[in-house]
Image 1 (cartoon, rainbow, N blue to C red):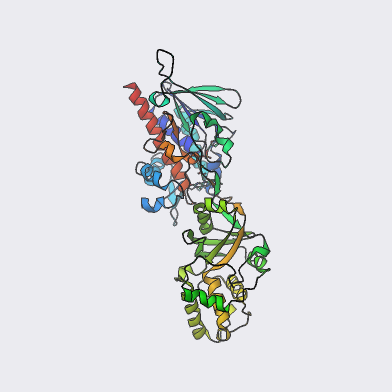
Image 2: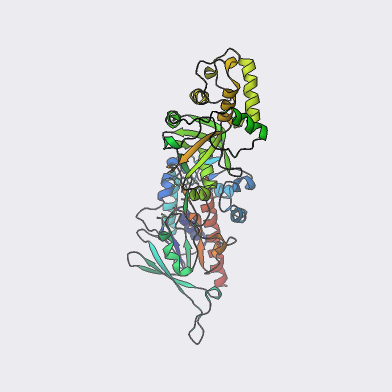
Length: 470
Ligand SMILES: Cc1cc2nc3c(=O)[nH]c(=O)nc-3n(C[C@H](O)[C@H](O)[C@H](O)COP(=O)(O)OP(=O)(O)OC[C@H]3O[C@@H](n4cnc5c(N)ncnc54)[C@H](O)[C@@H]3O)c2cc1C
């Protein structure tokens, strides 16, 4: 039997190795066809060169929450091969791993080359054939069962064979094809599948930072020119609207961006009542980034695309201090006014907000730097409460995250049987990895879905071969 693995990335290598461990050679031929000149190029740069292979999170329910797309399908996949299976897989083959306090798992060597070297040498030893510069451009499906009249039976009743055509003119005949070509935001990169009739969902970037380039579009002087989606009681909104000066702050963006480098732990960033994320945030030289922002970009990938990446987000800088609504923010500030009386407000940061950011929020709220708590007007206090609980930023554009980016979209999940990873349209074609409409947030979740779907595909192919032999 000839097995063609298309794509020499994480999923392709992992599947090929699992196939090679169970199938005899030369009786069965396993080939990896890689379109570019480089193998495992994303693995090499992954996790800042350290390769965050998975996450050690123990609850599958919690693990699945890290997939904006594919959560339902992966439940079934992970019930058969999950993070602990992966960790055992590597460690039983002599690759030492370590888990960082936040749950991310890396090779103990801190180098992705450990994984790459193991994959390359194992493929070599086990006789997996590897062809670089072999970009698949077309698949011809040849039905093996032919009626006496010469007419082929419907494809899903046959054991198909496939003729694979590559960009430089070469051809390969395969009994099984495993597609692991990764994510891409270009539909033309899926055109080799045209004969299979598979559909590709809308392809969009995920995991990106937010830019705030245009000073004029900056709405928030802390005085709320836009209505926040955050839950406010009528009394709460009244407090702000009555006393707000609603002035614009054209220099606000530059001042905000001058805070580049400041990070704040455990904020909440909100796009709409239903779409928000919690985590750390980093102010960058052109906007905001960090885990909370990347997570929001992933869960709102389609929504943000619809808005052409022009939208408003609201940041609760004091989320970790249980400031869960504007009234609580205001009441807390009123208490501080009583207790801190003669202290200078800008010199006394609260809610573990970094000093420079606090000074910025104070000044944005219309409070002079040397003002004492005692002398703050109720209007200024309301402004500050709003800036702390619901700081609004108008976003214009995105920056793809250099650390880790993935594609939202890919092979329509309805067309794949997740028990086997086999195509529901063309038997003996399988899919694994980011080519599917599955993506996760940062933290090792993308690799885990690639390894798990690859493992299941490999085992389904092995089972199909054994079934054919008996
Ligand atoms: C900079 C960066 C860092 C990352 N770090 C992490 C991390 O630390 N942890 C994590 O979990 N995830 C990380 N990710 C995401 C992770 O790398 C991917 O989700 C994962 O590589 C997907 O594996 P894959 O095998 O499906 O696709 P890929 O690894 O992208 O491999 C697909 C391969 O198929 C080839 N190919 C494409 N089309 C064809 C064709 N027509 N014919 C033949 N070959 C073709 C491509 O050239 C490529 O080599 C990172 C991503 C990036 C960009």
